[in-house]
Image (tube, rainbow, N blue to C red; front, side):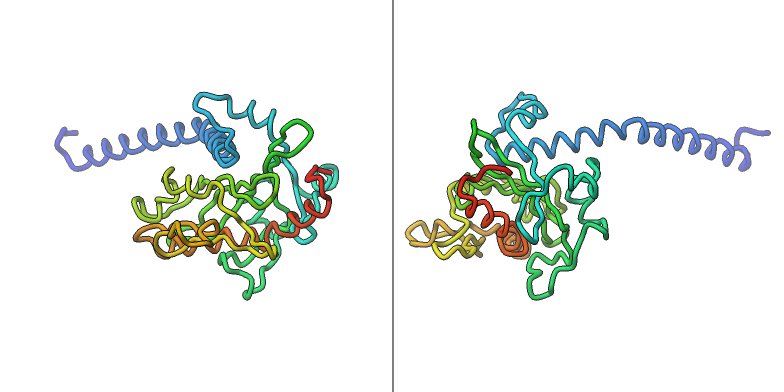
Length: 267
């Protein structure tokens, strides 16, 4: 067979493609465990950042294990679910918001009138991360998610032990436009959340992400966050996401339960 024959070129091309396909497939399978572990560490990093426990170079898993207790709560009642109970319906590997939100047996529909985060349905149970400080709880870290412009944005929102003062917000997974909606990752934008108040004196959700810049002289500025410049829909998505999860459909029943308990201790 001549080197420049059409048949030989096709055979060589197919051979090269087959070898490349085998190499790519092998790498994809071989690197999968490392990718999963890196995703887990990225999630831990974001939990610790939201809870102001992150420092460069720390052992993420150790800090998480030493400082944070994971609670699973019933969103309807707001009550923590004993581990021996929730382990009967939720395997440890599914204690993940994305996995839980995609499981029909673990989700329930959200009434249209209440679905401001555009989720359609939500988990019946959610993990809540309690940062321990001696015998008390220093702050709580809540998973949040909701629709932006191009994607569902997944993150964490931290409240102080008073369950009113915001300590931080992070997003660990989203597909918003870099330089616009992607500014949810901008440290400068995230810093302004620290110290803002989630609820008003009447107990209703007051925090909001406004369009434009917050006026420092505004007496209600403690309830307001600057919008993302050039990203109106993402800004609206963040606002709706935070307000949904702080409200009655989200963590407010749990927050009321903890306030009623008076100690903010886990049960």
